[in-house]
Length: 388
Image 1: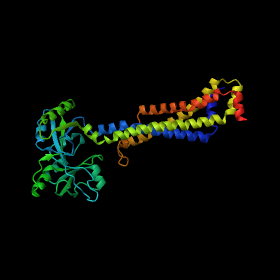
Image 2: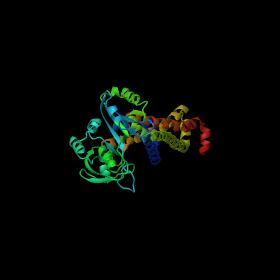
Image 3: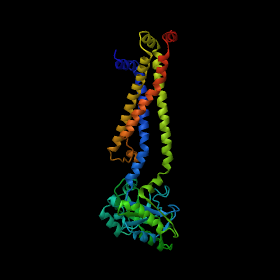
Image 4: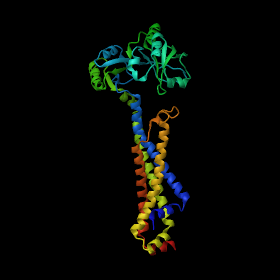
């Protein structure tokens, strides 16, 4: 007698129940695999948007507290600094009823191309930005969201600074991930002076391009030591760390996700255990006959357990491969789908795929061991009395 065809025929006796159970296990394993992509996906997303040679300098008290504008020149004079530019939050509103819809900053036009060299900003657009005092460079994401294009003129209403400014869009940041709106710092400074509000002598953050990744950590310490006893103490961090602070609220969310993953795995065990128990209960008479024919308890136990493991493994394999196919499909679109946002960066790796398969195998073993053990330990007479 060949046991594998025998086990397979037992699974095929109730095709609908087998298919539904395998489908439930497959969906659960697929969900687990997708949830497991979140920690690595967030880290990959941060690594993708951040440079390893760019650091951010801001007030130690927090991002809402400004720094003196004189800090910029002192930072530029530090050894290892290729270029440095400041961002000063303007808080301009395009539609008053919606408030601030995109980040808009006053910047110096000259260092943009060197500080963000990896963004491949168009040199001609940068030159146009330098020539036009009211020029603006806008991220493609913001352009698409508002239906703007290069050459359009828009007006932003100031919320922090009591001046409204009109801008001519002269360039774009060629990334749909970029929500930025940059305009010349001098433009805001002159508008404030014309309104009798004094000049713009503060800045929000300083973005620094370093010549060597090995110089990043020493340079951050040197900059912070330079202003240690100043009126505004600085805190320097890598660009990845800076962006990670905005995602810090997601750390608790990731913990919740991992807890949910464990609960989903537990649900899979109950689903598979229920199916295995029903299958054993329906075949008590057949199991008694097999024992009467000489099948040992160990063989009965092994056959029933293998049946549960095979069902769970097949369902789990389909679910894990389905999750892999879904993320590969998203990845084929360039890793960023505007409709899905950063979910395109969450990839089911080979490690997660193996974890999903082992989870399915584990579920099959745990769910099948109790019904199989109970059926194997019953005597023939006891089993027949339960049936008849």
